[in-house]
Image (cartoon, rainbow, N blue to C red; front, side, top):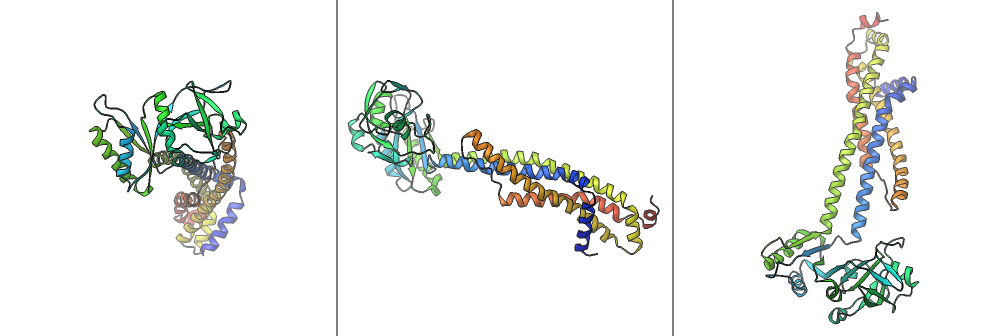
Length: 396
């Protein structure tokens, strides 16, 4: 008997008992669909994380510095000097001063707005651009000018799109708005990326304290390790200890979070795959029942000269076909659930999160389902193959 004939006979046996076959495949269907959705969710989260951090710049290093008491501290000029000395790896640098305080625009007091003191390079480092007016300039840093650049949300919400030349009060000090940044988020909302104010770091440090962090860009992301090492070595020479500074790479943060997501997805996919094993046990059980029901048929075939390997081949192919059919159904169900999950996740989170299973995941799920059918169909097939034809013919 050829494999094609065995497959044709297997399809007939499967179709002859549709309800039993569906119930048999249920574990496989659920397992495959669950694995596909979970892997797709993991891919979506990974892409969402990458997109979120790419806006912050994966080619940036963040340096946090704390003064070593009265014995040693790092000035802004010294940090610029370190960047210049390692120009083969490092490019732009911006001191940053975070300001926690209120902003008063006219009669409105704003508390959710992000206020930072930065250099003239920060807008370029962050990937933003100025849509109207001008950016902060080097002269603003030197003169400690009371000027600022604001995000698109503040421009629209409080100035009706005409903020350039207007004033606002930060920490009780009046600042003149000299520029408005181009919109970054799809929607303008309070607390978003467009709800921000940048002022000269020299002015900010006079108001709220010294500079304690820096954002530095790398010339080539492929040399992250070398860039970090060069920066840490220079800082170690200044402080003679690594307790007073921290160098953080955005790319490393993305890689770490991606690894965590992959581990979580792997664990969840492993749990979901348990149902595949349960489905395999169901297939083995139903095939054992099928062998019992078809004992006389097996006896007749063996008495007519059918070899053991043909009998075994027939039942293994039938088990594999049942499992493969369940795998295909599970893939279709998993794709439908992925589309539905994308819509639900996007609406609930308000973010563009796509649950997108990869072709490799789909192929692996199908391959595993077929493999499980063969694995769990072997025992019933072996039992059928070794039946004594005389006993089989006398079976009632």
